[in-house]
Structure formats: C-alpha cells, structure tokens
Amino acid sequence: MMKKIIKVLLIVFLLLIALLVISMVYMSRNVYQISNTVVDPPPYEIDPALNEFHRSLFVADMHADTFNFETDFFTQTDIGQVDLPRVREGGLSLMTFAIATEIPFSQMRKSPAGNSRGGKLVAMGAIAQLEPVKNWFSRYERGLYSLGYARKLIEDNPQQLMLITYREDLEELRAKNRQNPGSTMGVVLSIEGSHIMEGDLTRLADLHERGIRMLSLTHAFDNEAGGSSEGVEKSGLTEYGESMLAQMRDLGIIVDIAHSSPALINDILDRVDSPVVYSHGGVQGMCDIDRNLPEDSLERIRDNGGLIAIGFWPRVLCGENVDSITASIRYVASRIGVEHVAIGSDFDGGVTTVFDASGLPLLTGSLQRAGFSEAEIRMIMGENYVNLLLATLPSRLSDGM
Image (cartoon, rainbow, N blue to C red; front, side):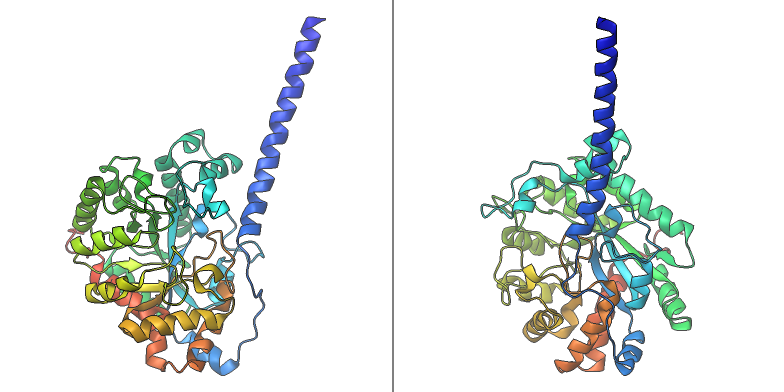
C-alpha cells in the first residue's frame, strides 16, 4: 500500500514539475511580448518621397536587446519590436545588439530608492527557455550562451547579416550597401554591465575575442565597477572599474556610459581619451529623471569626441510620439553640435517604444519637419556612429590578420 502511495505521489510531483516548466516557458514568451510593445503599431504610412530619401541613408541603431531572447529573427511577427523583415522595412543598415545578464526585481517596480542588486530575472528567463543548467547559476555562462546564439545567426546567414569587429568589416559593409542597399545588415555586439565577468577581469579578453566591441560598466544597479544611474549608492569608479577601463583601452572596446551614475560618468571621462558613447536614453535637460544624462555631461562628451544616442521610449523622452524623439535630438544638437547625436532605440529592451523597427522612416520625416538639413539627418541617423566606429574599431592589419 505504501509503495502505491509513494508511486502516486511521485507521479503527481513529476506532473507538477512538468506543468511548472510548461507554464514558465509560456510565461517567458508572453512576458517578452507584453514588455516589448509600441505606442503606435504598424503598418506605417510613409510618403513615397520621404521613403526614397530614407532609403538613401545609412541607418545605424546604437542599442537593441533582441538577442537576449531566442526568437525566429528571420520571420516577420508581431512579437517584440525587431525581426529582419521589419529591420529591412525600416531601412536599417547597422544595429548594435547588447547582451544583458542580470536584471533585479526592483527594476520592474521602478523603485524610488533605486535598484538594489538581487532578484534574477534573466536567470529565471534562462530556466524558462530551457537553457543549459549552467546558465541558471552563472552570469558569464548566460552571456556566452547569448553571444553564441547571436554569432550562430550571423555565421549561418552571411548574405543577410555581417558581424562588425574590425574597421575593415565596416568598410566592406558600406561598400555592399552602396552596391545593393539593404542587402546586408551589420551587427555590432555589446555587453550591458561588467558584472557578466563575475569579478574576473581576465574574461574581458575572451569577450573581445568572441566579438564584443562595446561595454557599459553598469546596467540597472550598482556593481563591482561603479554606480548605476538607477542604483542605490550611485557611486563613482571603483579600483576594479579602473582596472577594467585600462583593459578596455588596450583591447579597443568602446566605453558605453549608458546606465552610469553621474559620478561614474565623470570618473570615466577623467580617464578615457577615446570617444565614449551614451548608447541609449534621454537627457535631463528635456526629461528630468535619474536614468537620463545629466546636463553637465553634455559638454564633456563633446570634448571627448563622443556620441549621445537618443532612445525611443516615453520614459526617457517625457513624450509618446516621434516628435518627442526629435525634440531630444534637437536639444543635444543645439547644445553640443549635431555631430555628437545618434539614435539608440532600446528595441526589445523591456520597454514600450514609439514605433517598431519598421517605423524608422517616421523619424526621418520628423527630423525633416524640425528643420534639419539632409546632411544633418544623414549624420544623426547613422553617419555619426559610423565615423566613431571607424575611429575606434581595431584594424585587422594592427592585429596581424
């Protein structure tokens, strides 16, 4: 009798485990869909003349999070904000895809006291997506898994995607797009938050070898390298962070100051000679929230030769339409020059954006209405970022390749 009871209990336990796994997989997919929506959904009506001009641009987005989640990237869907068909419809030639490895629960609550470290939403996502068990417990392993997924997509589809790791890659991409506009999209790989390395600086060289060319020291919380704009202490650069900056300089990895606290931004700019980027977000002069770039950072970024990329989501814009994006672009351009402005959508970053990837021509039209010249629009929509990459990416020749 006891054996029968134990057998029944074991069956019930296994059924509950199976139900839990199925529920987590279902919720994971739905959370991704629910958290990456748009204010103005497609399809978008684009004037033919505007569309023709937009198609002549080299459009480069400095930040999206699409590769943190495994989707059918090559099929158009209504899930998330990015897939290759929508990318092509939006005229994108280059995108930077960031890998995030830890997000605290407090990020979801938008805690007024700041995000304290704890609560592992990304780890829960790894479990829900049935990733290898090692990913459940290690930020580094989760990061390598996402990088591997991104690299495989690119390597298996060389006619459609091209990994940009050297200056020569970018030059080749531009030549391809001049001959056949929209045929191939370039991909730059980035990391959000140095906590991916779990305190081991020797892993930075490995990430560089795997194709990482941009990295932000912090993400949504304070970590070993310094303070986050959304953290609790919002401290400056630590000794560990200083060592990391030195290694990033030696490897040629671009420093991203998005999500950095004001103190950390100042410490970075005190120590870094190469151009930095603020890859996605807004500016406090237009929208006064902690997440956005402080006013006194604008001139310092200009003097550094860096770029400020304006995001596409209402929280950092204090507005919900395409003209809100343009207003922040205009503000930065007026303050420090149009050569220091770019775009960084934060598509698929757990935010509601004004439009999805197919809606980029709407922004070009808004910039036209705001009085930007054709040359200035070309700079904002991509050429400024291209110029920064050409100035900062390593050369195959210098690497002996």
